[in-house]
Image (tube, rainbow over all chains, first blue to last red):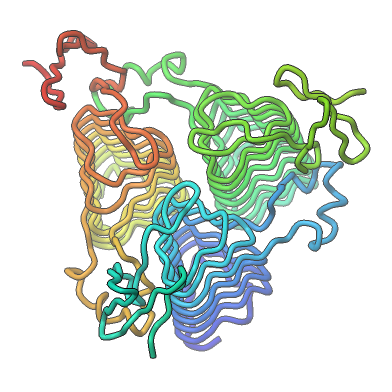
Length: 196
Length: 196
Length: 196
């Protein structure tokens, strides 16, 4: 792993870390995790085996990326954002739960964060959701269902409160069209797309 | 402490840790904490002196278990769940607060998580609550009062939204009775009990 | 830095730490952070360059204090409290975001926590807010605008739910006056002040 910076206090057991990625103090990456290139992974973060992270991803301090969570390119994960991968958690050590946890098919529910999306500070993502491309989950939101591309969601549970551009700026639609940074966005039937 | 696994980066000052318990990277357990057998305590967790943890408990990464918090057997604590032990916190170093913090009786409020309960990711438990046996606190819930046995609570503040079985599955009551995993549960006057 | 206690596992790159301050296990303080005297900074906390912390401050475990955040004297930061410093976060490594993040003036929004205030466990502070003197932000609150002096705020988003004294006790006003700990507080036009 050339050109990967690993802080002296970090532990990286994974073999699959892309060039230019930096892993800071007290980070722990388990065997079997995949991390792309040019990522920045802040102090005290934890990446579990079976997690997959794309390129140019920013993971702020203390984030925990579990097995079953896939993070595409250019995503931002704010401080204290929380993922889950089990809808009915029990202690796997409880005798009456051992059998359920003996097979991932019984409990593991995946989550997908699509390209360029941002998860705000302290947001909680219930397993099974897909966060759409360039969506912006506001700080503290509780995401209990999938989020459309370019949507701004907030609240507890999270609801669509607006739309944002690739750069994260609010989009103001007029007659279903908005422009930002030289690009035109079209809103139709609750779906935002870039007009090529 | 035979048969206790302590990761090379963890610090365990407590003497009272049960067999088969595993403590992972960057964990810190202070002197005076009690931890049972066959627990799993994830990376970056912190257990304070005066905290008590039973057997078969799963504590996900980054949890902080303060003095005054008691966790019974078979409990699951999700990532980012937060306990508290003071209802009117001030900096104990502030000159006008030094006296209050000179005696635990002035500020320390206990919390109890009973057997087999699960605390979801990012849930916050206000000091003084008891989380009932096999209760399930949903991710992100703000628990400001005690939770009945077998209750599913969610929201901000948390309210009872349903009932779950020992294994964590939703219970559907008909005429006050529900069955799950071969056991019969009875709901009467807002209290669920297992029918022997 | 005489009389500063630094746990053997902590990393303190800052030069400006006041006497009597203690930094516990796995703490990381970056170059350029300023920390006053007689503070207590719990395990796994992170203090970024550009953050400023006063005297007698209590920072519970795992807190992250970013550039742009100023904490005055005698403040309490509860476990899992979260600050932010960017209202439209994107991954700075995303090619279309590199330019915005090349200049702090484009994205950095400051936050101020004033003397003696307390931030409860798991509260989230949206960048740009000022938390007033001796205010008490309840556990789990989402603070999206500034908080008046002596206010108790709670909820999602946070709203004023009452008033507290310097020592954090609830103030009960009668004819606009309340007394606590030998001091008289006056409430007028939604502003609480101490009557000298």
